[in-house]
Length: 227
Image (cartoon, rainbow, N blue to C red; front, top):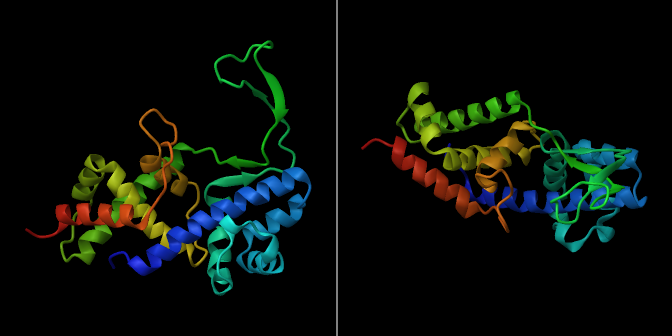
């Protein structure tokens, strides 16, 4: 089935709100406002997350707050973040810091507290799974448009349209996360294929939108649909 714009709009909103809430949780753990055990439990289990969000609704920052009717689906999405993209570390220790990131000698750097919220490290297996998700999304698009493809052609489309196929696969994943389905760090690998630049760093001021994902689907549809 082609991507449902209504569900995608909701999923993109839940992603932005969930990320904002997760950052707040990390800061709350670091400041002692929230215990690690409580934060980790409520960040991992959808029902517990929903209970916690309802209990602390008035304390949650505006940028991370949803309509109360959306709390169940928000909790579902929020619960996927620790499995997909981040680790919440109880005792992160310290890291060496250089203000301009140009020299880490003792004169130009010093130790600071490491953040409790850390981006997951990606393995070769995670990257391979992300590639499989891209291929699967193209194969599914062929089925949805009555133009089924063989896997070799889908692989060729992915190799020539990496950013668009990553966006399409990510769009499907976003909708699955509304039901608390987490596909693991492969999703982070997908994100970096369109939200990061070729030098391996985040694109400045990048903000995901439904339009980006639907445009990618439309672009790919033109490649797989019957002429």
